[in-house]
Image 1 (cartoon, rainbow, N blue to C red):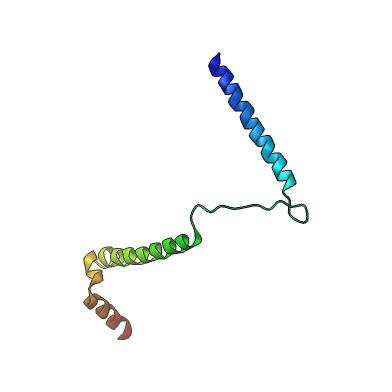
Image 2 (cartoon, one colour):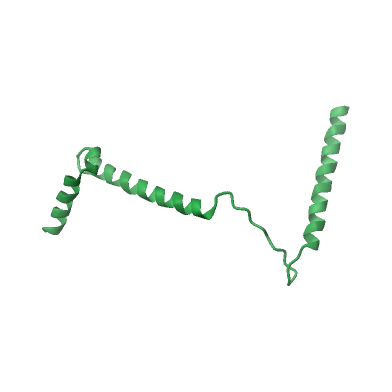
Length: 95
């Protein structure tokens, strides 16, 4: 029986909290009768931009490694050598 009583008390307190929130929302209004919604961001904007930049760099590097090794039949680590890029640029410029 005590478990049932504690569940009932929890349900009552939850209902009280919901009711208090509703009443508070009614009193807090902005001009025009609309409520102002406060948004709390889990990830800050500067961290989002940093993550996008890092993901972009990682995708370019992985794409170059994949393209050179799988499509070009070379070794993936050769992408990081300067001679590889000078050879690619020579192929592009000297059509």
